Length: 346
Ligand code: MTE
Image 1 (spheres, rainbow, N blue to C red):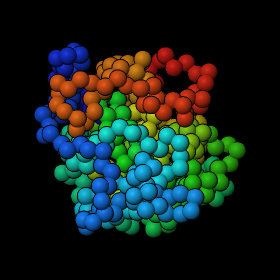
Image 2 (cartoon, helix red, strand yellow):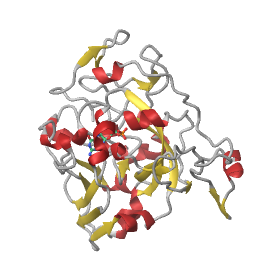
Image 3 (spheres, rainbow, N blue to C red):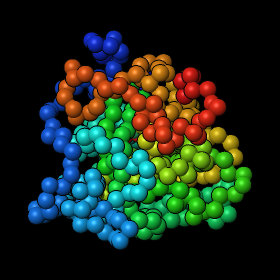
């Protein structure tokens, strides 16, 4: 997310839009292939295989079913997973190359330029790590990373991710539905929302010393959104544990909302009665509202939301793609917003 106080902007010659400088830096041409396993012979090509009613499928079977076995780069620990049965868990678009997913990031705790997180996030210590679940719950939890990794079967899900700045990616995440975690804590009848708080340690995170946002980074979801099967607690991507710059060791992925809702490096989930106030809402209420569902018909005060630039697919002059309502997940999530006025930004 570029922010008015820090980002340098450049005018887009086609749309007249003002884009953050990081977005117009020419990028190399990437392979950008679909990323399905072509064969299992070579070392490191483990990734995920599918699961059917009878158990694990062979990679060949998974591929025949359009499965999600994704080549993993082999730099981080493998995070094996099974094919997700959640409807909508697979965007059939071309995967964004791993290099782009892991070098073009927003993680302001490590700096505001897109390349800062990849350069600086090596100082993040992801073990030991504790997630606290408290507030309006019958069974408050303090869960260590090993417990979290075992809590539910890891699934691979290929989601579109749309940033409010007008760019998008297609990322093969590994994780499980957030609902598995929330249900473990047994929400009370007063729980209406979930507030997510992320790590803010100036010793590990140089960006936290700047006042670009009120730290820690806080985000929120309505409880039904948090319990929706598409809402993912991700622990990995491309068949490996999350790289630090992508929000290790665990981050939220809410594919029908603008990317800033997907909080990284989460340390606390508090179930609450009142709508949480996010860090971005505190910074600019007119620009970053609570719902922030992707909507091509409603522009952000500074950026049109009608189209998007798919990172890793050509350069600056490549035609932009039309943005889809709810980022293409309308059939799955649209009914949650029935009766709401969607014509206002956020
Ligand atoms: N979470 C934290 N803790 N800090 C951040 O700065 N940036 C958000 C979101 N989660 C952010 C965060 C924004 S603006 C986006 S677009 C996504 O993370 C980017 O995720 P990615 O870098 O893995 O693509």
